[in-house]
Length: 112
Ligand code: 5GP
Ligand code: ZN
Image (cartoon, rainbow, N blue to C red; front, top):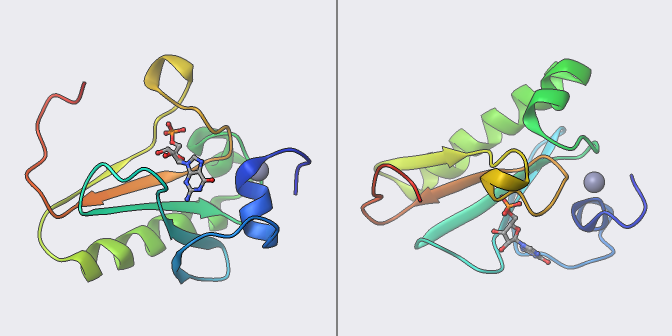
C-alpha cells in the first residue's frame, strides 16, 4: 500500500470499483472510461509502478496478473489485446502496474 496511489486505494477497498475477478495476487475491475465492450484493468495487490519493476520485485505477482488477465479474456471470448502502457509517453497515467484487457470489438493496429 502506497499513500495517494489510486489503485492501492482500490486494492484496500477505500475507493469502489466494479471488480469482475480476483486471485491471491491480483484484482480485475472494469475501466471507468471503457475503450471497448470489454475493458478490464488487472492490477497486482502489491504496489509497483510498472510491469518491469513488478516482474523483478515479485515474479509471483506478475504471474498472478497474467493468469487473471487470461481468465478475464477467456470470459470475454474471442480475440483480445493485453496492454501495459509503461511510461508517460506511452500514455501511462496511473503509476501502479496495470494490464488493460480489451476485447469485444475489432482492434486496429498499429495502436495510436
Ligand atoms: P493508463 O493510461 O495509465 O494506461 O490507464 C489508466 C486507466 O485507469 C485509464 O484507462 C483510466 O480510464 C482508468 N481509471 C482512472 N481512474 C479510475 C478509477 O477511479 N476507476 C477505474 N475503474 N478506472 C480508472
Ligand atoms: Zn499503488
